[in-house]
Image (cartoon, rainbow, N blue to C red; front, side, top):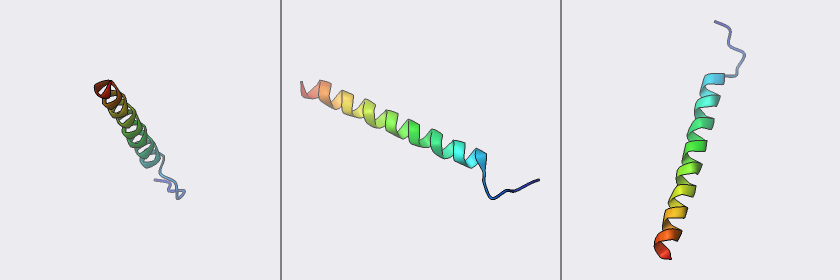
Length: 37
């Protein structure tokens, strides 16, 4: 297996986790705002 010092799968995984976290954060903020009003 060729290792070029860059793991695309790990990179994609981290990006996926980051996007899901951000989406959950936005969703939480939206629900908080709706509940506040």
